[in-house]
Image (cartoon, rainbow, N blue to C red; front, side, top):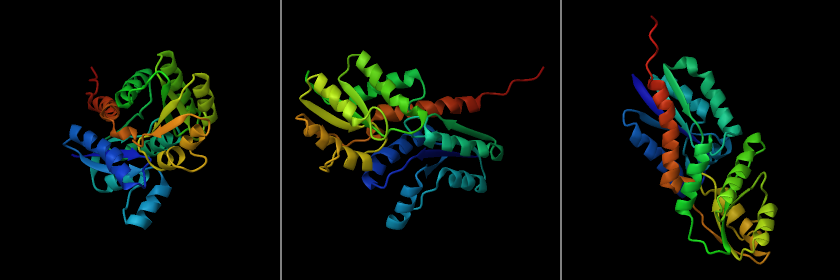
Length: 267
């Protein structure tokens, strides 16, 4: 039986970010399943179009990838999402996978990064692993993407957990709560003199480079500096962190083990 591993991410148009984050995750996942052929899909149609026009690089969206696997005779397919929360992008993948369940003998989809309480605890450990050493008046500010989906609450939940643990980390989001104004108010309330900025995203792509680290007047770095607090960006995606890659591998193993369970025998 032909077996495949399909790794699905939002995608990025930055080649180095793709190599350091997406390809690093794909490589680690593929190493755990050497009997499977590895495939890639992006959920962002805008990025897919840009890569095609600019670089001549053709990337499938999830539906195209599943259709390709079906047509090429794969019967056993494991899929891992590299998304951070159970938001719109993951739900879109889940619906597409459900529509193809009858086309394969085994089709399993691994959960995104933050899917249970244990995931939050592991993510906090991973952030501690890659955080710079912070002085008492310094903080690490993590920039999440945010969402209009109700799963945006994951960012506030993570921030609340880290605050309760007494950790010097603060979470904000580009497109939802906690907004940068909320983050800045807390920095001043806590008497912070310097922050390090790091993306809470799989890749350090457009948001990290422009919205977080650039010299544009509305970037987080500039907005924070304008209030008298020093800001130093760390342009590094979560996919560069081996502990994050291990979390994705654990999520895939959970559904892989489920798919390998023998059927109950009828007496």
